[in-house]
Image (tube, rainbow, N blue to C red; front, side):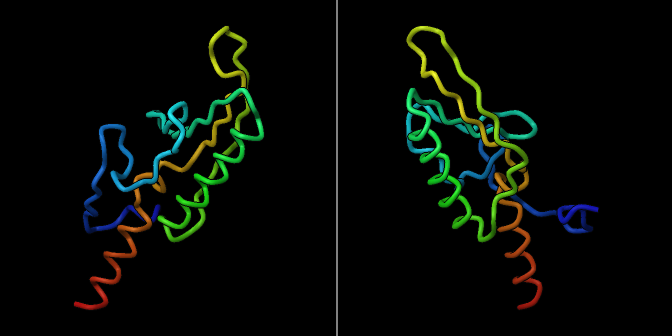
Length: 116
């Protein structure tokens, strides 16, 4: 049984992609949180170290926001040799519940239950 499966409903403030509205977004205009079940967070660049550095910076800020390490299921590296597009495509395949802020909501609910 997952942490989210309980008798009480946990309200999450999600955007249209199903992730928390407070989730730190990747800073570069070419990076994005994609809307599929395993939630790839994409970092594209012609310079692989730059894409990896932005991915690491995003992981750090998201871990700080989440209050625990982000569950990264896999890291996928691909390339796109189409003219006019960034060559490298780094995707962090992240746990959907983490990106939705579920651990934060669970802690807040537990703190509210302990206080009440």
